[in-house]
Image (cartoon, rainbow, N blue to C red; front, side, top):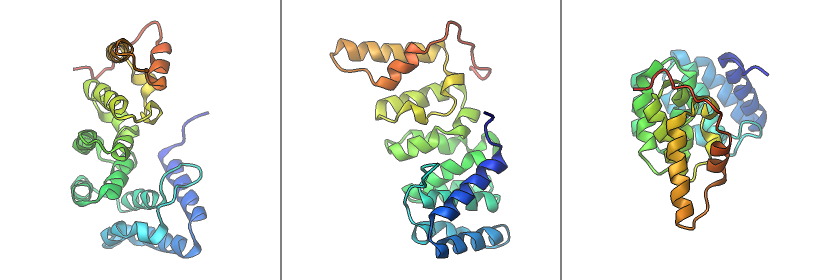
Length: 212
């Protein structure tokens, strides 16, 4: 099955959120998205949790407030300066939403520093948001390998890493193999997902075109 296009993914997220939240919250969302491109929408970004709640959506699993903020950033066509400011000034939930929105915006690789900042933290919620489609598209191979290792060291499931099947290369496998060997030598268990990546090693691993 083909992956959904960007408009399809956004439409599905919007429909899921509208269906999941109370009527009053859905009305607020639709009104806010309707004028986001022409008005001061940042106050709505700040109060999204109070308006739609924080419960996880049933299909995507994204918290409702995160979904509202992602949709709002896209509707406003937020530029790099805006998303950077919202990330730097926001709380953990607002930062997470900015990271999740990056793959829906037209920022190119210029927002990579936000991903790098999130990967320097030990907040697993930020790390999960940082290793999505945007990271898979824009981190160079060295950065991406270390993002995968960050997940391993902080206990973030490797299923959260977008592009794992296509971007895993021989060097990452070596690094994961060394990690697994060290764990085994110390009598400690190897995380199941690390073992699965190593077991799924194909016979030939092409180098990523962005290899430094």
